[in-house]
Amino acid sequence: MNSITMKLNADELIRSALREDITSEDITTNAVMPEYKKGEVELICKQDGIIAGLDVFKRVFELLDPETEFEFYNKDGDKVENGRLVGKIRGDIRVLLSGERTALNYLQRMSGIATYTNETAKLLEGTKTKLLDTRKTTPNMRIFEKYAVRVGGGCNHRYNLSDGVLLKDNHIGAAGGVKNAVKMAREYAPFVRKIEVEVENLEMLREALDAGADIIMLDNMAPGDMAAAVEMTRGRAETECSGNVTRENIKRLTDIGVDYISSGALTHSAPILDLSLKNLHPVK
Image 1 (cartoon, one colour):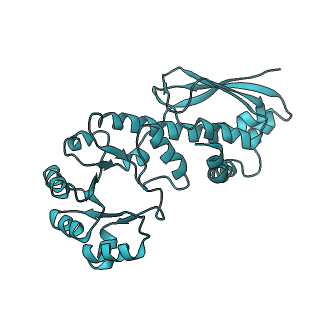
Image 2 (tube, rainbow, N blue to C red; image 1 turned 180 degrees about the vertical axis):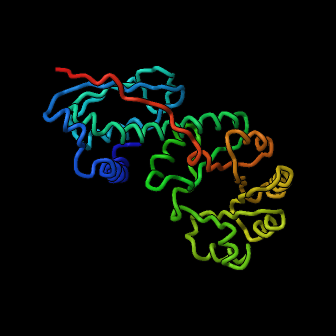
Image 3 (cartoon, rainbow, N blue to C red; image 1 turned 30 degrees about the vertical axis):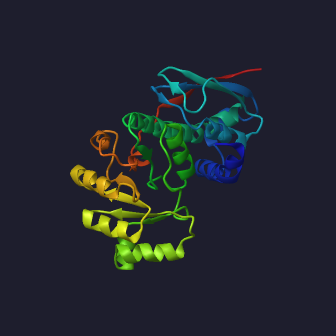
């Protein structure tokens, strides 16, 4: 995540998270540390995993005090082990205490997603299939969670509703059928946009292909039907399979030959990676 993206998109969200945690003051910190004193604290990993979100972690403290100093021994995408010293943060002890939880919330969440994604993506190694995320993200966390997916070795599906045409079951119902939904989307959307259609059976697949869909999403279909759908679609459209895909069950889909597998679990079910700020002490 580069500095331009951070300032344009992330700063407002981080400030909102800080305001959520500090509505008027940090009573505990102000009680024990009424005046400025410089300190240092260590960022320690307490689980094996993939680190992601160090720039966001850093930005939390910078927004509280731009004079805060950082020394990181890892970068996003690195493997980290239990007990690893990831970095040191120096600055106003009041800032280190007040920003600790918000900064760790971002880093733990993003690192957990990167770790889960990495473990899932490894199961697709040796195939042509790419692993995608979905829009099943935490509200106001999408920019961070989708970044973490990329760090973990996955790919991003559309970022939001303005980013691409995906005709799902309710869109098809509203339009009166697959053929009409694709026709209306083709007429409305810019010509540079691909049109993806979600299908639940082979009959819907035939309709979508005949209507000229660019991407076919095979939703909650049995593996045998998916294999037949891939063969029917070959050369006419790209294929994506979706529907309750997790790290634990993705192996059943690896030999089907779809172009993409999307998994909401990457963002909605990844556990955090346990990290901690420890050993805070004054420094000169």
